[in-house]
Amino acid sequence: MNQRESQRRLAEAVRDACRKAAQEAYENAGVSGLCEEGRWECAVSALRSLDLEAVIDAMQDDPQK
Image (cartoon, rainbow, N blue to C red):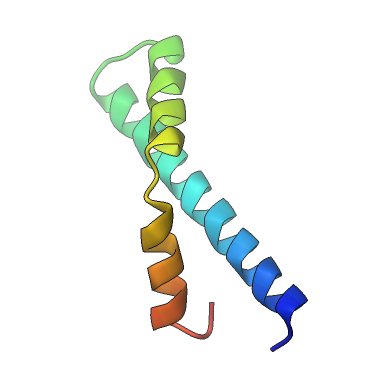
């Protein structure tokens, strides 16, 4: 695998992790009864607190990613 492909895989892994974190936070906030704005605030907070090291570690553990 060349450097460009490695970079693409990392970018895709980060994008997927961000999407998942935001979606889960948004849905959980809705279940908790938050309004639309509150749900978005929770989603943004999830993006800000995403553990990027965990994303990198997951990529190293699974070479298919």
